[in-house]
Image 1 (cartoon, rainbow, N blue to C red):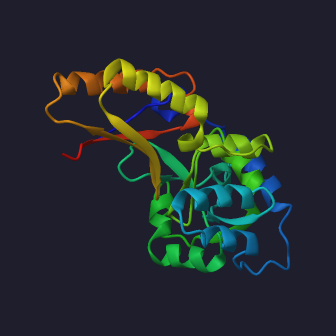
Image 2: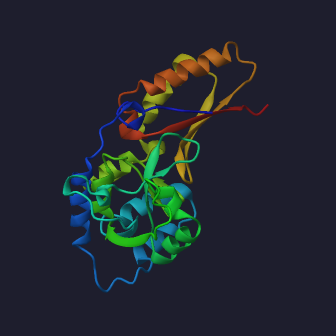
Length: 260
């Protein structure tokens, strides 16, 4: 298993927002809080989460976010200088097995947020020894938060299960429809060309995963001559694709033995 590196993300030193700019964004997010919001799961998000197929579930989540509300976990902090206010730092968690990739954790309802707090959410998002503090829920617009998180780190993690990648956030920012990597015809055409050049006998498929990047499964014959070199060439070809970040953000490539 290996993971592709997009050219303009934190793997290659992508730019992040300054604390004072993020702080201004968070203050703006607070302005739209609905005082009647009790933190219940919203109907459209509930319908999305009830989809049986993971791919269809992710697409439905993307459709529910523009007009929906999500809950952002925040840690209280002491007063410091206005130029470096820690409240401006969006909370982030590491993606398991994909270091140093990170995502902003969000929650679909107050009850799911509270479960995450009990499971140790504070320790996951804490910086500078803040893990002892109580995590507070901040209801925010899904689209507004996607805009805030687009540059740093460029991903959201919903309910600890659904990774919402950079292309999805880009679509939200542009009020456009998200096309996932496994349905992006231009991206699939480029991958087809790479396979013809490097592993013409292999079969492959992109599938979504829970709390992880999309997975490119490659079925190969273990007896293929120079298999390791061909897989390495395939990896390099994927990494060099200009539209990798726009189409998939991250892509986990997993070779498996082809069925006899």
